[in-house]
Image 1 (cartoon, rainbow, N blue to C red):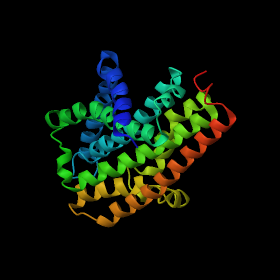
Image 2 (image 1 turned 90 degrees about the vertical axis):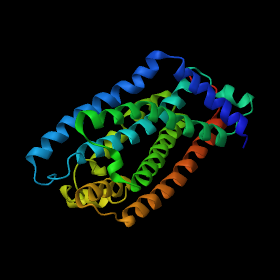
Image 3 (image 1 turned 30 degrees about the vertical axis):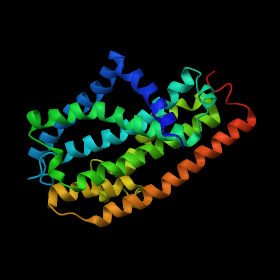
Image 4 (image 1 turned 90 degrees about the horizontal axis):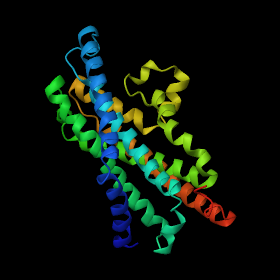
Length: 263
């Protein structure tokens, strides 16, 4: 694996973002609007719900964490789609680029995209709502890291679908997280779900991440078991996603569909 090739592909996507004012606005606009909206909703529920009494900002904090996950996953997908839309994917191998190098560059660039959109929104929460994610303390790092890994995992799975089925799979890239969100228990405890759905939810790292977020903010305690379970599931799903991505690439190359992937 060559760092120079990874860095070169990273710069390609970074310049596309940094040199385009509309792209930067697009990255910042939606997180700011969404987090502002959930901020007012959070204040309302804090005033009218005994569950969130004394823990103003629980919903908003979960909304920020979920938006980071969403931006990471969608960011990875968009970067991959950029190569497809520009019909540039096969050109990358002239370098020659390895699949591992392409994945590595997209992983780092997706993080930059997510932070560009999320940091301004987070900075607004303190003056507007008097809430800071720093209230989560040291566990905040592990929560963000776990969400980042899961976002990359989803991005890899969707990109594998794009390799296998072509641009017709594009709509799935926008809907994946919306499908998982009800089972992720982002804004409500696990007990809210019907029992059969709880079984499904416990197989997702999201449940442990957001349950722990609420646990820290409401009960002021930290349960490392939730974090460890989330990381364990993340490792399993990440290995599976990488394997599926490599398999899809091999199949696409075998069938010769890589050449027409941008059409």
